[in-house]
Image 1 (cartoon, rainbow, N blue to C red):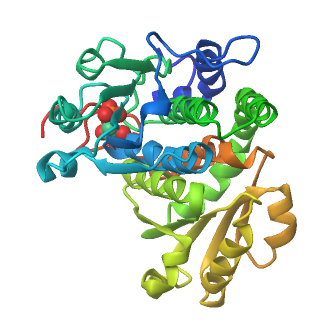
Image 2: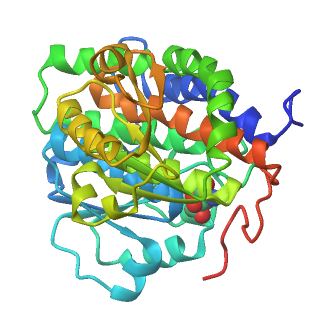
Amino acid sequence: DKAGHRHFMAKEIAEQPSRLTSALSFYLSDDGAIRLPEPGIDFTGVDRLTMVACGTASYACHVAKYWFEQLAGLPVDIDVASEFRYREPPLAARTTALFVSQSGETADTLAALRYCRGKADRILCVVNVAESSIARESDLALPILAGPEIGVASTKAFSCQLLVLGVLALEAARQRGRLDGAAYAEQVESLRALPGLVNHALSISDEAARIATRLAEARDVLFLGRGRMFPLALEGALKLKEISYIHAEAYASGELKHGPIALVDKSVPVIVMAPHDELFDKTVSNMQEVMARGGRVLLITDRAGAAAASHGVWETLVMPDVADLWAPILYAVPAQLLAYHTAMAKGTDVDQPRNLAKSVTVE
Ligand code: M6R
């Protein structure tokens, strides 16, 4: 049931405010304390977190790495499951392994989990399907409560994975004495603001559709982001290639001049994801290098970012203001909407893109 939408993907994008609200009410009590399913997680006994996933779920891990490291001072290793399992990496003492999967049935992720059995202190998973193999075989399963995701392109599962990982990082920071009560309460409040902000962000849909008619003419698209926004650039590129079949690549902004800038000319749209945070000026200088070479920039930013840096850019999408830390959750929305509308403009099969399956149960 598409609930009046043309595609499951559109429905699932639109559902994000209510799905995020469900996840928040599961993980936060009224007094702002974080509640984890029993028996909970003792982060004081963890020296290292190893995160493993595939595709979009792996990009959620990459965002979470910034959160765990910056907020909780907890070192994180990440690998895609198909590399991790065959590399057979040694796990250091006091390592917790964390697997992220919407379906809970991805073959490589499940095999990576089984590899960690007996080697990691603890096996955790962040899953959407609570009755899945990955959930069953973990010591503790943390549900994302996104509801069934039918569209092959993952949307609401990504934002809900990020939310749950953000909650975990906050809890780790609290337990490890890295956040005082006021700072913790402030971050919890900023998490609670997300459903409303995501709802607001959905209103850029018409503008994204207008821009998408131009993106649909491109053969190649580059996405750039820095820090927490780099994984969002990766996610934007994956979403676009998956459903519109346009070749898209993402780079950390600082890597531009180490090679990819050679690709830039006026036929390659460059999508820059940059809220006005502590790294904004650095990203803007990379953006200017693109424009100086005739590149057409679509800047996705907030009001302050647009006021500071819209001059000379091809298009600007203005997002609501959000706490810096949680911006990746909000900026998932324009990444999804641009891909969706570009696919619509190209007439591709949005919910069932060629060559892809919703759940990759073969290796
Ligand atoms: O079910 P999983 O989260 O384990 O699936 C992982 C990937 O196959 C999945 O995220 C894939 O990359 C999506 N189609 C991306 O939109």
